[in-house]
Length: 114
Length: 112
Image 1 (cartoon, each protein chain N blue to C red):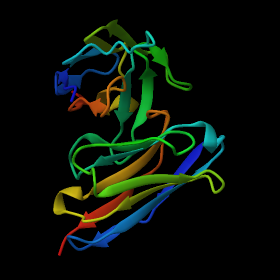
Image 2 (tube, helix red, strand yellow; image 1 turned 90 degrees about the vertical axis):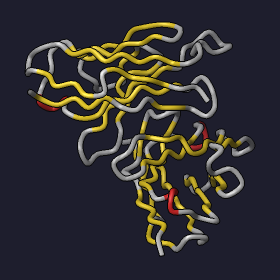
Image 3 (cartoon, one colour; image 1 turned 180 degrees about the vertical axis):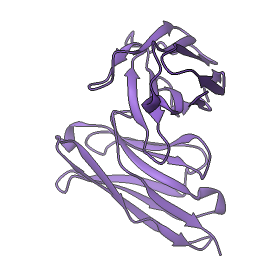
């Protein structure tokens, strides 16, 4: 069974940092582009970042460029999102997704508040 | 960024009746490889999104055949032939042709 499990969310103060992880199983992780998508409470879906299968190419939404870094460890079947300089507007459920949304994790909530 | 619009934003439906959601993009979604990367997602209350349709009209595995997608260029449609109670939720179109990928605002489907 294809499965994505996010972790690492929590409460952080403005200006702080968090690293999200997404553990993948049930498929050949190293063959797929992976993505992070977020959803603010009661709002719609917003694409945050993507990374190609070997990690050599990344893209970011303008709202997170320079603050967030996507990476992956294909040996560990894990996707990461390093989030720095967090702002209140980054508060959201963060989902990892495989191959442009074919599979989603359950999400992890990030709350940025003092 | 490519702007995705959907209509209606709210869709009360009667069980067993058809439903249709329109999605329009501000630019053509035809990619250089000839494919059109327009997907549809369903998000049931309290759940993660689930992809229903990819590349305009291809149903994902396990998706009931009452769901169908159509369209081309900048105009797309998701149809539910006969709405069932489990179809309640928010439906999003999403374009994967241009970066950043963008979603429509969502259409909330509920039962009258």
